[in-house]
Image (cartoon, rainbow, N blue to C red; front, side, top):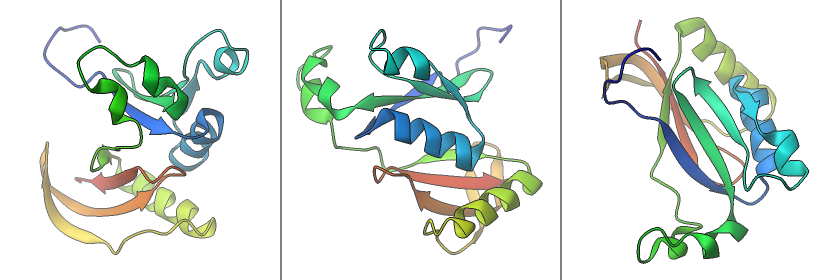
Amino acid sequence: MTDNTTRLDHVVLWVRDPLAAAAFYEKNLGLEPLRVTEYAAGTVSFPSVRLNDETILDLAPHAMADRMRVVPGADASAGHPVNHVCVALPAPDFDALRARLEEQSVPVSDLSHDSYGARGMARRSFYFGDLDGNIIEARHYE
């Protein structure tokens, strides 16, 4: 976090239950929950989970949509998830994630090989859905 190059800061996911969503991402991907206590106490509008030192996923409740008026039509975006969010993991973490999801009966796609991404060709990847139907791709490069 020491340079100011262009990079992804955060992605906002619309969710029905932000606390359950934070728990899902913590339990399955090992992401650090942020502002969960404050959200539960009603002092912040949504919690987040930390993907890495520079990137977070904001877990916005559908009820917040009517307040989203930053640009015309933004309030209509609730319930319209992005196509998918991709997280790149080291190979052992990739395998552990897939095993955890399968243990919990979370449906996962077949493995794909040599998919193109931000760092070139990923050796393996797969997709799964979170509690709200947001699609997450997991991949590893090495």
